[in-house]
Length: 389
Image (cartoon, rainbow, N blue to C red; front, side, top):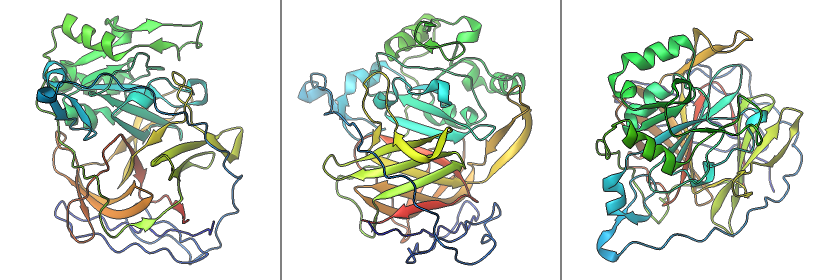
């Protein structure tokens, strides 16, 4: 496979920004990433980094048997995946957002494979946290549920979601309390809300909080939360990939020096497979497994939202690590991976209740492949590494 570099220059503009610049893949070189202000990084072209260890084949098992399909008159498209689901199901439920940890003791997680959407966000100290959205699929086991972060102030209103977490730092809890929408839709293990179990025989505390979608919807009813909620956002899907994509075999997202996420295209299955590095061996990458299924996590779409990340004064852990606030109101650059292709794009967002408006370089709407999506919120000054087939 031919090793290539990727230049993704960020031109942050106003909410009415013009189409993003054309993305190019210069041969045998990688370009310094733009700075947080959108200016080019220091230096000229540099030699590409030494190749990492060869990825081991991902132990991806055949998909599990799907539930009995709904009657034809009850079939509708899931607004988050574009796949068929039951209209009566959606009319009786409300999206759930579960905050799931991603440190070494929390891996492998349970339930990420059943989420319609998974957001990965830098939280503090170089670690990331998942916000998993469940609506059109059931998850019999979700673990490990962790504390809320500032990103939830953006995502809970976006989906009018039932917000599931295990407490938060005091300043973040205060911000949750000030938001009536979040305050009225919270299921918090620290407040002895229903829907959770603690299973120390499976994981050591504080990583041992488990739940399920059935338990959470039951808990929401017990606490008098309205089901359904407000109409959820409708993502845009198309089975055929748009024109203008660039073939990509792998894309590596460097959240920090010892934690990388590498998405590798599996053409035979038609999915992107997720690999991650380990703190003990940052030069290698291994499949990221789901504990409940034993299968490698996969995605039909990987959406990378370039946004400014600002460190706050909020202390999140005993090491004094400070919380990070991601600026998601405005506009910026995006990248979509689907069907083995990479698409440079742009995003806009005006309100916390909005999903992203996504457009290609020619201004046409960006469509997702039907299926699940992982969304990375990624700083503007960090590089993306791409290899082509």
